Image 1 (cartoon, one colour):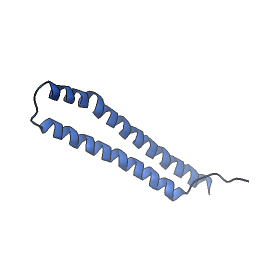
Image 2: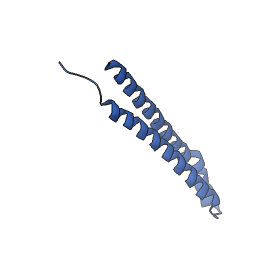
Image 3: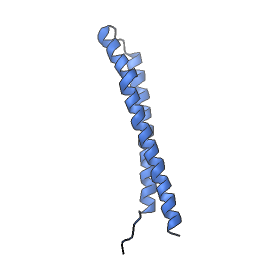
Image 4: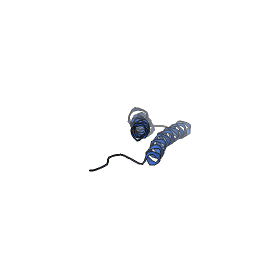
Length: 87
């Protein structure tokens, strides 16, 4: 008979690390946005880059952050469910 499950402590740690990764991406996105805004750069290349950053790149980072946040929550829920099932 096969036993299915997870090491609860490891799963909780994974959930925490995933959520920390989400927070780190948010911090880096904010720092990069601030650096871009404070850079003295004018002209069409600057305008294009800022537009791409604000319209595409920052949004993609936000999506990754959100996905990590959700994955972390799911791992934590799974750990709680595993803990309940093991009792």
